[in-house]
Structure formats: structure tokens, C-alpha cells
Amino acid sequence: MSKEFAISILEALRGRGFQAYLAGGCVRDLLLSREPADYDVATSATPAQVMEIFPDAYAVGVHFGVVLVPKTPPSVVKSFAESAEENPAAESQTIEVATFRSDLAYSDGRHPDEVRFTQSPREDVLRRDFTINGMMLDPLTSEVLDFVGGRKDLEAGIVRAIGDPERRFGEDKLRMLRAVRFAARFEYVIEAETLAAIERHAAEIKIVSRERVRDELTRMLTEGHGHRAFLILDETGLLPEVLPEIAKMKGVEQPPEFHPEGDVFQHTLLLLDNLPHPCPPTLAWGALLHDVGKPATFRVGPDRIRFDNHVEVAVKIAEAICKRLRFSNDDTTRILALVDNHMRFGHVSRMKESTLKRFMRLPAFHEHLALHRADSLASHRNLATYNFLRQKLAETPEETIRPSSLVNGDDLIAAGYRPGPKFKEILGAVEDAQLEGQLVSRDAALEYIRREFPR
Image 1 (cartoon, one colour):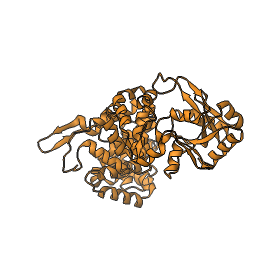
Image 2 (cartoon, rainbow, N blue to C red; image 1 turned 90 degrees about the vertical axis):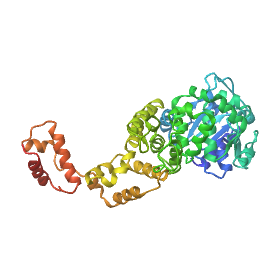
Image 3 (cartoon, rainbow, N blue to C red; image 1 turned 90 degrees about the horizontal axis):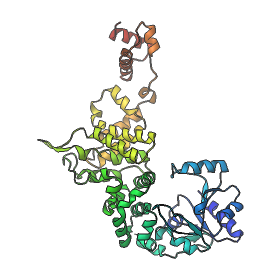
Image 4 (cartoon, helix red, strand yellow; image 1 turned 60 degrees about the horizontal axis):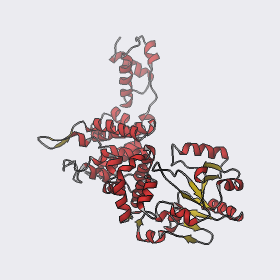
């Protein structure tokens, strides 16, 4: 979303006599010389007044004073607004315009029961979360309205709650996770009183909807600072509350000949360092959960530490986590596939050509390969298999990995075979031979079938 569009909205509001400023995270990012992901406008105009100025505007939270002003047609904006609840990361060509307000009581630990619109930008700032997010900017004059010391905290690298942290977190429990995310993303420290408040109230994060928790964790995992984020989650006591299965990885030793980096928790956090950026959410979660079955399967054998069947156990645990955090069916399938297949890379050098090609045609194989690379770099650092597969993919035409079938069930019936379970075995054998390069035509396939599977 362009800064110019946001400024045009700001100018239109001011032209009608209202106060209007850029607000929140975009101001923080601009002061840090970063490109904001989006731009928000705060104004003294009420939602009704905003919608009068911008007839295409669409109210998504009139009760809270929030209106979306689109570049796109209203029907598209409406569709976006309806989908945003399910996918807050969705993008739309809109600017959020929010009326200055002060929030009254929060009885659910997430949303204010009532808001009061105000003409004071200072009042609006005082109800926000952290000082670094609590500044307003006039982009026309570069004047910064800073009532809470946000610039000083930006320069010092501090995440500090505005006012009383007990009150800020009492109003909205999700802010505890947001504090962790900002501290990780910017490599800041959480101010002492703010940190202490999080530690005292960590268990209350369970009040927040699972979808919102999932989305914050996903941002931590995909913004490129997952390692630091999970260390801070552990430090604050939030980790066992939101992902106890990951907390259980701490102290679970691994055989040093394969994992010189340390225990399962250390390995997993190092792996997060080696994910691509930007990182698909499914890959990030697959990486986080790939060894989640190790704590439950840890045993010391006669020769070394073992984790027998840890993949199967990990898939079950990961499935339970995905269900708890309400991932979509498609995302769950992708995440579980990453967990389920990550150990197969160790067998690549011994795979038949047909098995290898089937492996390489797993859906989203690029994510499997990226996970293997990160897994290797976080342990033995041997990328031989990764490099071999990269070269194999580059040299192998797509049509030889996913060739068209030479024969089908109708061909078998026409050749005199009776339909039944045997068909699957025959067709599978033909595909194996095709993938091995032994069969290249329908006639050759039918001759192979008559020879290997006589009627």
C-alpha cells in the first residue's frame, strides 16, 4: 500500500477540518527507515464523517471507530473484510482509518467493552500497546507527535508498555505475544516492568482465541527471527502456555555424533535460523514441529541415544497442535507431510530411480527440500543430499518425474484382465518401470504386463 494514497486520505480529512496523522506501526517503521507493510491513519473524524468523505469506504469496526478506505471497488473491500477474520495476513488495497478514541473497560481480556471517541490524539495514544507503536506522524511536515517517549525507546532498542503494563496486558492479553514478536523482530529487549508483567500473567494468554495465538506465532516464525522469538517465549513463561510440546524439547539430549549442536530444543531453534526469508507459514510450522515426537520417544540404548518411531509420534502430536490452533485442512496436510517425510532424505542415496522420482513429486517438494537444508545446517552441516537433489531436479525434465500413464484400467480390461485389487499392483509396477526408464510406450507396457502378470 502506497504512502501517497495514505497521504491523500490524510489531506482529504484535513481539508474538511479534521485532525489526521499516520499512526502506529507505519510511523515506527518510517522512523527506522523501513518500508511499512501498511499505513494506518488516525483522525478526529467519526466513522460516519469518514464515510461521508469517502463514499466507497467500508466499516469493519464502527463500534471501535475503524473504517477501511479502498483503492479497489467496495465489493472487493467487503470480500476482504469478511475474509480478514480468517486470514489477518490477507492483503487489500485499503487504508485503515481509525477515529481517536479512549477505551473503557475490557471484560474479555481482548476487546474493549465500550469506546469513547475523542478529539485528542494524546488520549488515543495512551490506550495503545507499546511506546514504539504509540507515535503519530504528519508526513507533510515530518512532525512526530510523541507523548510516550517512543522515539527514545526506538533509539535505545526497548519494547515498553505504554503506562502501566499490568493495565495494558489486562486490557488485551494478546499484547504479551506481540511484545515478544516486536522484541524478536527488531532485536530489542523488553523493558523490565513490562517483562515482569508478562511473566506474572503468562498463563492468562489462554483467554485469547486460538486463531489469534496461531497468527502471532506464525508471524514470529516467518519474520526471520524465530530463534530469538522462541527464546523470549521461554524466558517469559509463555512457551509452555501456548506450545507445551515445544517446551518439552528442552533438555532432551541427542547423540552428539549426529547432533553436536545440543538438545532437541537447541537444534530446533538453530533450524529456524536457516529457513528461507520470506518463509511460507507451512514450512515454518513444519520446521518447528519436525522433531516434536522426540521427547516422548527418548531412550538410551546400549549403543547410543535413540528416538524410535519419533516421526510417527511427531505426526500425531503435530496433528493435535494443528487442530488446537485451528489450522485449515490444507495447511494441516502440508505441515504433517513435512513432519512425516523429513527423515526420508537420509535414504535418498539408496532409493531406486522410481522411488526417488515419487519422492521428488511430493506436493510442495521445495518446502521439503528447504526443511532438509535447514535441518542439515542445524546439525551435521552436510549438504551433499541437498545439493544432489537440487542438481537432480534441475537435470530431470518434469515429464519424466510426472509422466503420463502408459496404460489404465480400461486397457487391462481390454487385454482380458478381470477388475479387482490386482489392478493397483499391475499399474503400480508399470509406473515403476516407466519411472526407471524401462518402458516408454503403451505397447511396451502391455507386453510387460502380459509377461510379468500372466492371466
